[in-house]
Length: 307
Image 1 (tube, rainbow, N blue to C red):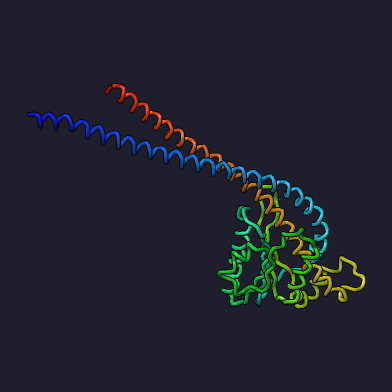
Image 2: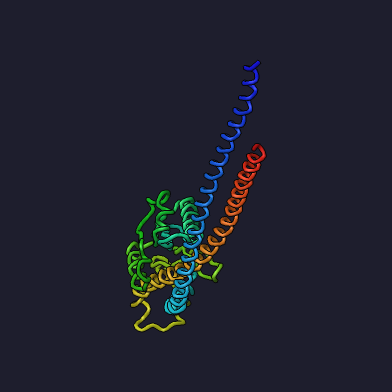
């Protein structure tokens, strides 16, 4: 009889011990969850501070780039308008794509759009049996096109944004482009429209081969509205290289302004998303904290009732 009583008295003790052990496990898991959520909240807050700082830096750079673009485009536009009077004739033959991208990321899809336009153009030209070459300005363009189209690379120019881009730098790129003597040339870049919009265009750039094979009547009709001293035939070679430089300079300036504007928008969206994420994690943290407090109160009340 005494043995049965002892077994009955021991059974609740073991059950209560297991309950206390399970409560201890839940408490440990709750503490670990709270610590994990706290670390995550701190990381999101630091990320939000970084994105806000990057937005402020991009805003300051945008004002400078916008002023540079407004002062620089009037220098290049007269020569561009002169050559735009020439008729566009699509002929068979090799084509050189000049991809104007940036050296840094975190600026939306500006570099992706340029790389996509170049890929589509190269695929279409090679489907027609034309040889394609690629000249890349900017490290992001090199990274995006190197894996599939690295064998088409003619020349690459990276780290151009370390110093302010000038017409002298554009002249170096134009000199390399003129030395390759392309049959056809297209400059793919982003045209700045506003703070929130831009267009990715492939500008047809007239080459020396196209100018020499053009109908003389059409060529004279386009050029006779201007007066040249000395004659156009004597200065044509230098004028054409200057035209290359103006095309590249204008494209890089507009692409830089577009990059800065899109980086502002990207960092603003990133800061907003970080704030929303912080709110969700904070709600999870408060719920876990409240559940832990409720569990501890239940344990205290249960212990007091048992006593």
